[in-house]
Amino acid sequence: MSAVLEMRQVSKTYGSGTAAVQALDAVDLAVRAGELVAVMGPSGSGKSTLLTIAGSLEEPSEGEVWIEGTALSELSRNKRARLRRRQIGYVFQDFNLLAGLTAVENITMPLELDGMKAKQARREGIRALEEVGLADRAGSFPDELSGGMRQRVAIARALVGDRRLLLADEPTGALDSDSGEGVMRLIRGACRNGAAAVLVTHDAQLAAWADRVVFVRDGRVIDAGPEPEGPESLLSSGRESGR
Amino acid sequence: MSVRHALLALLSEGPKYGLRLRQEFEERTGEVWPLNTGQVYTTVQRLERDGLVESDPDDTVEGPQKLFQITEAGAQELDVWLRTPPPADAPPRDELVIKVLVGLRLPGVDVRDVLQTHRRHTIAQMKQYTRLKEDAADDLSLLLVADAQLFRLESVVRWLDAAEGRLKHHAPVAPAAPADAAPSTRTRRLRGATR
Image (cartoon, rainbow over the protein chains, first blue to last red):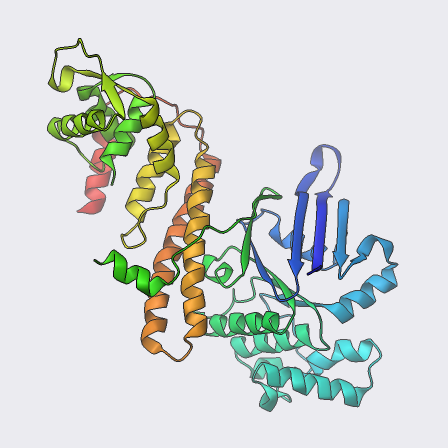
């Protein structure tokens, strides 16, 4: 299966000369439809830069990024913006919802910006809220929702309109463990429905939801697997070890 | 804790007498695990029986004065042990700590690589418990057991992360420390902390 996201030899340098800081160094990453990949690393390792470049919010200094087979460097600024609106959804730790808009308006705004009629956008928005179990809160403003609910609205916004690539930066960082688990179940569900997702985190419990974990350090991928094999069943393994 | 492998690590630096092995073991494991000479000697005898260390066949001296050296099989055993995750059914952290402390002093061992090996393995275990949780959303007992395991394993990863952070900010540790350094301050601090 071809990759929804592919990054090849991507480097990013901020500044120049002696003040140059290399945030990413020759990073390769491919994420297929249905796959959730976690990128783990300490603060300053380059994982958030990796995500912003994957999402076309920043341009790499070197290397290339493809979204569903389209090389971003070959697109004009406008076409890149359209690709971002239509194919990529973002989820951030601090939700990034607009306080003056209701839950459903937060979701429909990018659709309307992209030319969709208001009525159809609302239908899509309500459907997306149903997916995250919040259809009954469509008219609520962000400050009327709990942190967990706000993040679920952000996920609905990220996935509305059949976006194929979901990019999440510490999406449960501001939530308690129960709400955080709810958010991860939604992201996993989105992948089961065919989305590709990249999750950057320093939290091992979050990374454990991923199909694959890629480790970055000092801007480089230091370990991209393969996963060591574990016991067939944890419960049977526990019984055996207790013998 | 594997005294056996820690002694192999010490012998990987060159031949040593039994007495010196005891002193260096305590020194390098932060003096948290004191050993008596008998323990050291019994363990080295077993290592010799298993072909992992050897002594001069003409050397008739026994006990702490006997000189031992690691064999090729012993060096291989040490390398495998350093990278082998501890059993999943035992609290893994103490053994991990030992492995890292031992690895820190071994020439040619990239401790960050050792840390990463254990980090990846621990997260792979966490993934299995997360799948268990995912598939058992209505089974409260199973969810609680999975949560307990996940928090335990997460603490291991956090320690590995913290260890890597410390390595980054500390000067490399010299391969061989003098064995006769006074145990004193550190021992007192550790004992005070565990009281």
